[in-house]
Image (cartoon, rainbow, N blue to C red; front, side):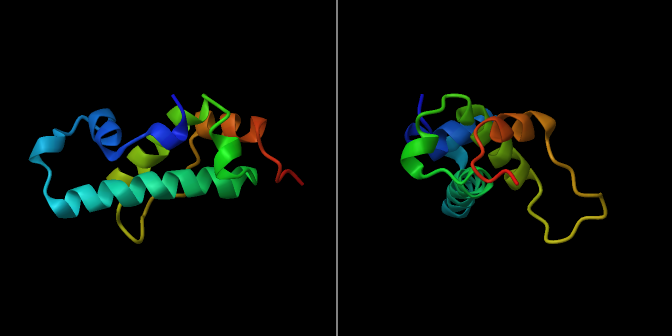
Amino acid sequence: MKISEIKIEDVAHYLKLDFSDLDEQEKEQLTYTLENAKDYIKRYTGLTDEEIDEHDDFVIVVYILATEFYENRQYQSDKPFYVNKVVQSILDMHSNNLL
């Protein structure tokens, strides 16, 4: 599967949500989380849409990030910032933005 093939229905399934029960606002939220996950990958790695589609391992990263974005929708958190080590490891393997 390619990142460009991931639909909000797939994200809902990954989140264990019944897509048919979601209202328009919830579907819009899933759209934002999916797009933000893709944008995060592009910004982190410096890759283009076409380049991120070449890496199958980014699919799980999209799902993990979308889950994080969906479940933690608050502006501020009392928890310290946490970076998922699996996500960081996969993104680091393909990053053009290393200093």
